[in-house]
Length: 332
Length: 194
Image (cartoon, rainbow over all chains, first blue to last red; front, side, top):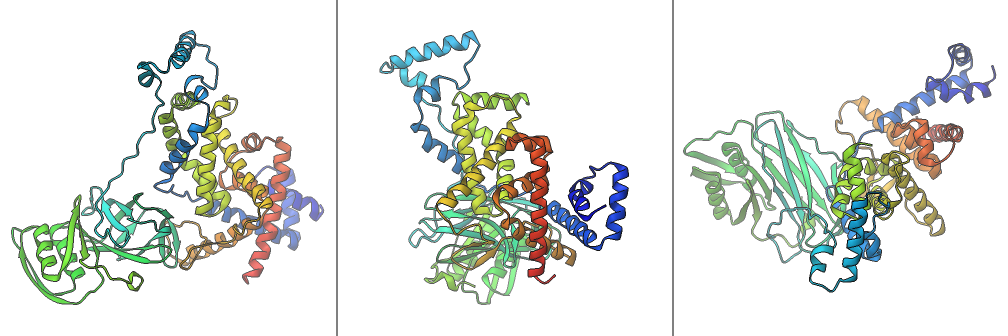
């Protein structure tokens, strides 16, 4: 057998599509010819590599909304008659044909009061999204909000992260930068040196993007995940504190120690089994001595003491610096 | 064709836009994944997938049910991908490189890996990176045929329906594409000193 014939049959051989006698001859050749054997090894490696590339990608959260918006924008350009009255495939059903005739007649009398009711174009199904008032309406800083029903006290948690800018921010990228050991994020994304890129696209004013997050908590202690939103000009960070899977709820819980605001919030998350997200820049350890019954009250006390703002979005406590820094790129 | 699929398609053909919403919902994963595998990056995958759905929206009336709907859909996605290439040839474009460029820093194109960990994983990742670079160098049509066969794992007869060419031609073109990819893989490996 010549090398040409062997290489010609290489793919069929790997696809298991050669007859057994020919297979033996081929294998004999591959055994004796180092060039062809090398080519076979490369082909095997290539097939294995291609098989490993079959990882399914998750569809961006706003993909369908954008497709539907484009289709809606395009629809008026098309013939009314074809879009709404005449089906693309002529029907053989006599009843339907009669219906079409009636519809066509109705169109002729389109100035009658019945017209709007009978012939109005069917509207798109509105995709629901949660809108939350912006905490920083003036500087265009995007909100990184968390919503949904956090079930993070168990071994799994599902949360929605909402990116809601109050000004156009252009090309943007959201990365899950770091997580504590014992926390895993099953949300699909591209893994890079900086973390896992969960979403990228254009962020426009008043067009919130919702990214569903799936967490797994494997160790019973408060877990943290740091998110990074990069836009054309700025970088924003947001820390999410998930409680341990054994929230300690007692009638009156003392919180004492020299902690930064984030550490104090982490303890509140742990003690009360709530999820907290923070957007705090200037962190300095300070003595905290609170005796509280409810997470809201604990956060209220902490916020008053340290000049922070807070609000809840569903069962998540969002805590911010009262005055965001001017240069947000310095936020590290 | 499944009854619910048939119903959705018929409603779409009558211009029911709520049905189009259902159609996108049903197929977005398949379409997006094929687009991602063809283009190799999120930006282009987004464009190809949404252009493909728009083409479906505009021409669903032409779908006669001669082939499976998914075959028809895949044909549209590959055509959108190939048409973009024609456009690029007439209006040269700098894209299709191995990196997506953002204003702040570069993000190397990588394939999603949900469980990064041991060295074996790192090696696999490296192979996939080199392979992706080699695929990016292939002419578009070869990229299409490699994607349909190796990544989508479609049988020859379905590929022949999607590309509307005889089975024999599909096989010979696939063989040529695999050979071209092997050559590029070898040169990529040389380039990265393996």
